[in-house]
Length: 229
Image (cartoon, rainbow, N blue to C red; front, side, top):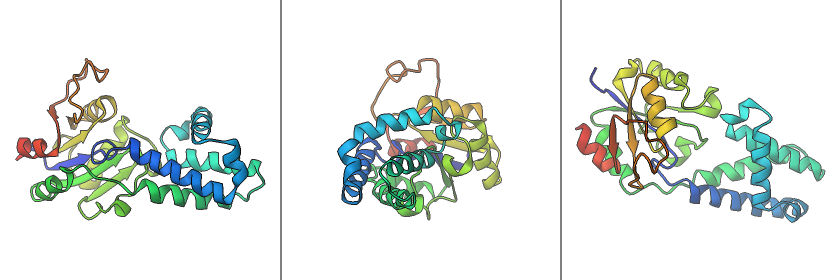
């Protein structure tokens, strides 16, 4: 079937995620320091990260709902210091605002503006970036986030849900992402075309998945534009 829709991963596909999370966690930690100085005196950013990783193992929901994972940890830590649980809600707003201050890769907007003239566009993400806050919602017909959908890539259900929302067959969708297992293999196993966006110019071996064969490999969205048009 001809490809009718291009569906994008977000983190490390449309913007770099590591500096963004560092910024969001630093912003949150500074805010907590103003509200609850005793918390930051006890917990560094790294301490909170370690405790969050341990908390993830306690509930299967946390494997796909990263918002709930952070929120639950904040409620626990704040409660230890006598703070009302509602303060965790405020903290998550601070974190989310900082997390949505993305710096798009330079190729993203020119490519998306060109691609949307020929394809339906959408996004599927395991993270909880807000495409409206980021400013991409008017480019995407549909966006699915794992934490609100109820499962995460590479589960076929999240890919099939996108096809259903667009009223298309999975084979009419092309999925573009940076992660070989979650994005490429996950899409392929759900019946989509899987494209590896390889911004770091890695080999399949260097990426740790020599047995995964993407349908297409591109170094950026400008190359994708050239390949699909």
